[in-house]
Length: 105
Image (cartoon, rainbow, N blue to C red; front, side, top):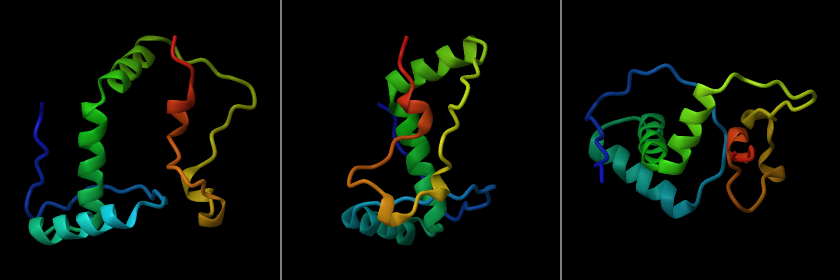
């Protein structure tokens, strides 16, 4: 199993907006990790997501399979941008990325 590594003071990355809701206990732990590592919240969240995605073997296989096959365009299948979902419209459970909803071969 890999270990999560958070570099102290390393927050220089290009950013893309991601709006979502998280559990309060997770938010508290993220804030604590920010204090501990002397990093901005967005950097810590980014590193945690990168680590989690890298650890998902099924997702990594799926991603590799997508990279091997040519892309197929489906008419009318435009994913909803994450930033356009209002907090009041958000479901109780986390919303998975649009790519994760595709059927596996």
